[in-house]
Length: 55
Image 1: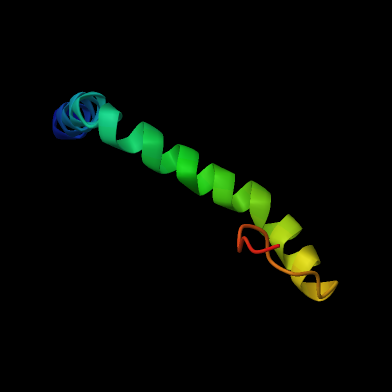
Image 2 (image 1 turned 120 degrees about the vertical axis):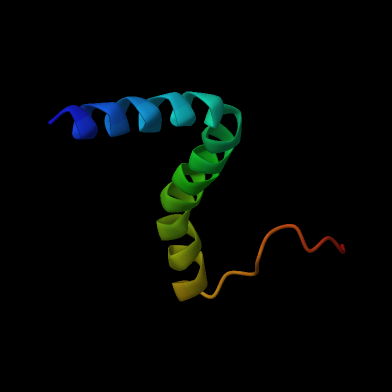
């Protein structure tokens, strides 16, 4: 039981040090998950992709 508690504390401390890395990564994953249904709908509707430029 003591080993499990110590391992949990070590993991929590390491996650606190890794926070500057994980926050932007998790934000990107959430943003991709939110925008994926929209991108799929646009593809199904055969609309041109955005951001290609040209006029």
